[in-house]
Image (cartoon, rainbow, N blue to C red; front, side, top):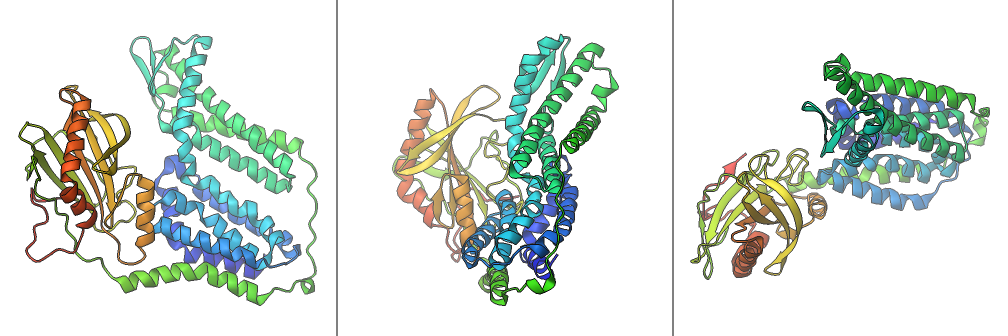
Length: 505
C-alpha cells in the first residue's frame, strides 16, 4: 500500500485516539458482545494490506469537496466524545478515514479501501441495539415452534416456562445479535476476497442474515427440547449451552463458506500500474492531513486553556405561596442509581392540604465515560423498591417534562416528573441534553443536573398530576429559575441547598 495512504490512516487512528481506546476497551472488557472485535480488527488490517495492489493501480484524482464532510465528521466525533456517547463516536471512525482518503486520493482509492475500513463496523456496539428486538423475535419463534416439536412451553417476558416448574431465561446474549454480526462479517469477507459484484455481495449478506437467525432459533429450541426431555439434567442445559451455540454456529459458518466458494466466480487478477504513472497532488494530501488532525488538536488546546470548571452549587428555593420547604425527605423507597462520582440532593415540599412533593437532584460537575448523566447504568427509578410501569410527556409551569408512573412493593402508585439541566439550559430528551453538553464541553465543562419531583397517586394519578402541576406552576419563579439559571459559582457563605446536605457518591 502507498505509504501516504497508510500515513493518512495512521494519523486518523492517532488523532482520534480516545475513540480507538474506547473501542479497544469494548473489545476486551465486554466479551459477550465485543469479544470478536480483535479478530475483526486483525482481518481489517489484513484486507488493507491485501488491497495494496489495487490501490497502487487505481487512478488518482483528488476530491477537495470531501474536506467539508470530513470536517463535519470530525466535529461530530469530537462532540460525541465530549458527550460520552460512545456508540455514535465509534460510528464516525470509518467515515473519517474514508473521507480523508477520498479528498487526498480520489474515489478509486477510497472505493478499494471501503470494505477493509468499513469492516470495523462489525466490531462496534451498534449491533447491541438489535439485541432486544432479536430477543423478542426469538421468544416469539419459540412460542410458535415449541408445540410443533412436542414441548409444552409458555413464554412470559424473557422466561420460557415448562411443566414441573422448569424455566429458561432467554437473555440478551441469547438474542443472536452476536451471531448475526459475526456471520455478516464472514459474508462481507467472502465478497471482498472474491472482489465480487455488488449484487453477489448483497446476496451473500442476505443469505447469511437468514442463516444466522435460523441457527440461533435452532440452538434455543434444541436446548429447550433437551431440557424438557431430561428434566433439566442434561449437561447441555446445565453447563454447556453457550458452548453448544458457538460450536453449532461455527459448523454452519464452515458449511456456508464451502457452499459459497463452490459458486464463486473467478477472481480477476489485478496488475499494478507502473510507479511512474502515479503523481500525487501534495496540496490535496496536506489539506487532508490538516483537516483530519486540526479539530482534535484544537479541542485539546481549548480544554487546556479553559482549565477546570469553577465550583458550582445547586440551590433549591424556599417554598412559595402554599408550598413550604425544602424539608427533610423521609421516604427511602425512592433511591435513584447513577454511575460515577456525583452529588445527590433529597428534599420535600408540602402544602397545607397535606400534599407532598419529593424532590431529588443529581449533579455532575463534569461528565466523562462512566461518569455521565445519561448512561445505561443509570436509573431514576432505582433498582430496588420501585417498578417503572410506563412513561409519557407532561408539562408543568410552562416547562416540558418526562412523566414516569411507578409502583412500590405495596402496589402504591406515584408519578415522577423530571427534566435535565445542562449548563443552565433545560432538556427533556436525554440525547439532546448530552449533545448540547458535548458541544459546550470544549471549554470549561458545564454543570449537568437532573431534577425529579414525585407525588403519590392518592386518591388517583390524576390527583397526583394536579398536585405536580400546581407545584411546578407555583414554584416556577423560584424552582425553575433556580435550577435553570441558578447553577452559578458558589457565593461566599451560600448554602449548597436549603434542605439536607448533599450525598456524595
